[in-house]
Length: 310
Image 1 (spheres, rainbow, N blue to C red):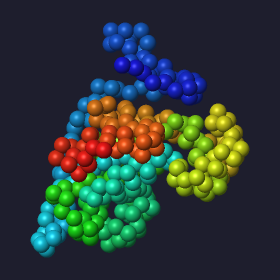
Image 2: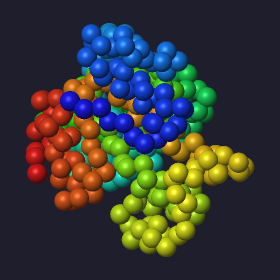
Image 3: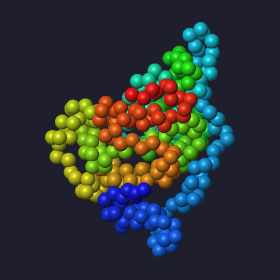
Image 4: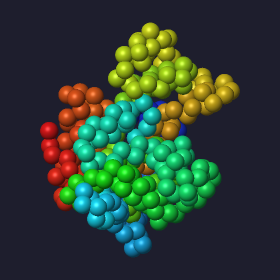
């Protein structure tokens, strides 16, 4: 019932993003009056059609484990993909879900440095170079996840009523956008959670982390003290870093554009009924109960018993 437009949507890129957001939201009979600027427009009909096409080769994810009687058991697996960005409390949210004994916390699995690539069962535990990861198909990405699920399920030896839920964190730089889109629109038994934090607050935490090397969780007191005591430049001055050299300057220079483009990509790819929107405050207030329950309610019905509501 509303269109959310940020200040940066208006002032960056000559306001093209803000213009298009309003243009696309008008009643259809009036959209010809304000046509979208083609350079940044999205074919909404084509986008919706593409999200409805499923790759028949991507069958439901299953794993093999041994039950308490020593008998092999096939386990059905649902997947929670947490679409977020650094310094948004994504680790805290996955940790909350990890309180369930039938939740497999795979963290940054698709990151080149994640647990799946560095020491998983895929490729004999060999480290896989990012260049190879970025060429993997949807089926190969799902196969990699299945391989790790089977390894962990056998190790943990939990029956869980024959079902597991796997949680995977996803940041924009892990994969290419076409790979992200393939996962979001084709992976079986998938629940997509979108966790977005206020950009100004993310900027402060990101600045501290990039400039000091302190990547501690947002809730830890030491990190809070650094944010409170450091002289952090305001987000509106981010362009000053574009004139500097080095990795830190590069990351800070592209901070607002990356944030806006990532979350717009997610929401253009998935309609509202295909995603669960969780805010930073949902995670950090009330011991994360609201965030936990939002994810629990969104799981496929056969898996909801794994996460009883709090």
